[in-house]
Amino acid sequence: MHEIPRFIVIVLVLISHSDSLLLVKLSHIDDTWGLAGGIVEYGSPIDATATVYVKEQTGLEITLSRIVGIYTSEDDEVLTITFHGEIKDDNHDIGTEHQQYAEFFSPEELPAVDEVHYRYIEDYLLQNYSIIFSAR
Image (tube, rainbow, N blue to C red; front, side, top):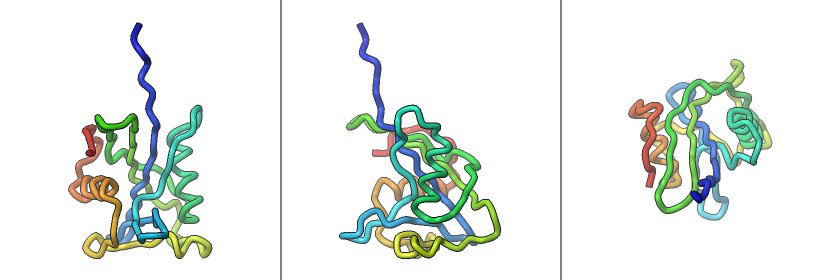
């Protein structure tokens, strides 16, 4: 009998505005930044989970426009789906309570970004959309 594979599914959202990328602080200890998102709970819709995480982490309401990539690795049982998101209205201000944890950065002036998240950002900047491959 074959074992049914189980994955932890992570959704991340890359949001761009005026040639800048929205990043959230992943660690308050070492100032590591990355894309907004998190783990999808069993039974939760992937798209709704992604937009809820962005709202919680940045205060912004978004719509998902496309998949940037779907990533797996041989080392663990994690499936990461990275989306491109667009801000719903003309107000691109990060919520007041989120300003210390979320910020727009130009691609040339990115802060210390998590290594894996940086790969996803590279794929977006190189316009390698909807590519499925191992990220690590």
